[in-house]
Image (cartoon, rainbow, N blue to C red; front, top):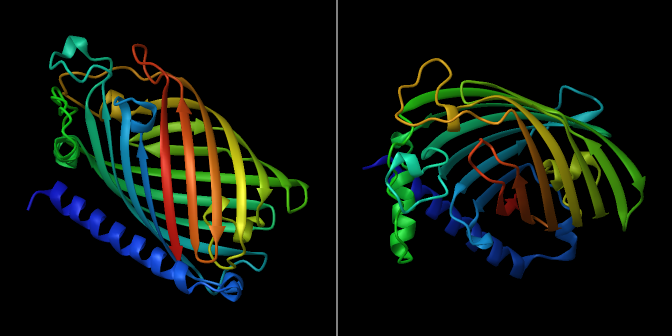
Length: 316
């Protein structure tokens, strides 16, 4: 069975299972259950630019994540979590009608991968370390997956000409956050500084970021802002983030850093500006997020781009 069909069926089965669980849980949820704790969570996330009437650059991403809160932490002043995720992302040029390389402003490429992560959450600090590995190129199944989606909706499928060639990647990422609370609930105001670093064969970059949170939000150790599970107190807040990314290498544009004989590659922009808006609502064991992400042009010929992200999660 083709790899893309396995991934598609797995995503569909998990999506249906989680949505059914959410619907049935809503009927049985009681006020007391909001105060209960959980140690596990399954999350579905889908990124798409369809809602801004675009079909270019980072056009779709699908993620399934499982998280587990460790009962016995090695740290007396915080808590630890583990996570594992599978993901598929694909990228297309602005002109998806032509099959001529000279009409492209970036190459076609797909990425299919798996990542694992460990995090520590303290009273005012957060640390995340992730390791990811995956396949880039036609083997990632992005062309077939997009073709399946487009054909089901009666939309023309892009030609996927001159894709970046197959390669295997490994990447490491670490994020640290320091947070300050400026006002208390129910309309709290918090600010966080979140520098992150990625290095490996897929991405190499340094990214300082500042995030503002407004609304009813829990402390770091139990907040969905940091994907924390445990105490499930209700949350309803809005966040705005701004970041600058210093890029040293981006294989989704430049190919594998060691050697890549792909027909068409472009040089990545060294400095990117990113903005993020997110609305979050958590009630009992269910969490819902709606995000909008902006990134400035990633190569000389491309333009700035906006995508939306939809996230639902169930804790148990």
